[in-house]
Amino acid sequence: MKIRRLTSENYAKADALLRQAFPNSAFEAQLVEKFHNNGKAVHEWVCIHANRIIAYIAFSNAYNGPDVCGLHLAPLAVKPEFQKRGVGEELLRFSLRQDVIKESSIFVLGAPGFYKKFGFEPCAMPICPFDKNNSHFLSIRNNTSKQFTVGYEPEFNCDE
Image (spheres, rainbow, N blue to C red):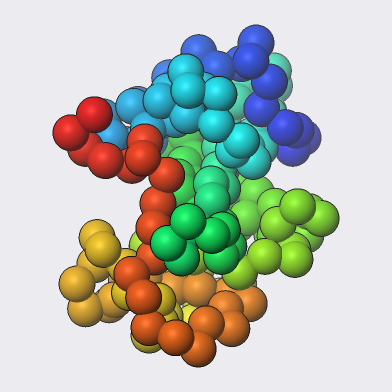
């Protein structure tokens, strides 16, 4: 298994993976497609096994008003036949060690049991607009001391 930055040549393969990993939701694939179409600076990596993309991870900017205050981890996807084999864990560990990521606060809306293994903790501040009680909103390296609602890139809006 090799981990590489996603290149434009592999956008279609990443899209196919996202659609397989989230069969009941088009949101994740559409989100990544919007990032690519809009030329957003997104940090993306893929796991490649036997010349196939089997996992994908992305990080986009998190905002406090107009200011970048960290990164959002979304989405993380693993091809169904490779799930529960540590592929997603390895990709997440790899990405958290990258220079562009390891200096930032990282926010994620996800399964606490999974993300706590990597040092993520429940996030009381900032508030996640997609999780009213912040019950699935976690962070790592978060030093936020003032209450605010964290902002996302406009591509996260469902009505676009």
